[in-house]
Length: 52
Image 1 (cartoon, one colour):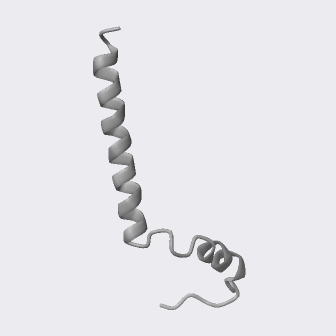
Image 2: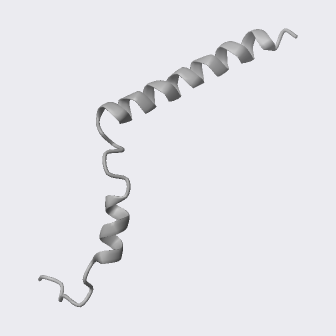
């Protein structure tokens, strides 16, 4: 049972780091257009010649 005194704070600390990282990603608009890239891949015209 002594291990719980280490595991509980460690898990709360790691969960807090994950929450802060998620909130930072939301604040910097990392999830602004999740479907835009997928649509661009499907609709890109590959017949164009690459620019030099």
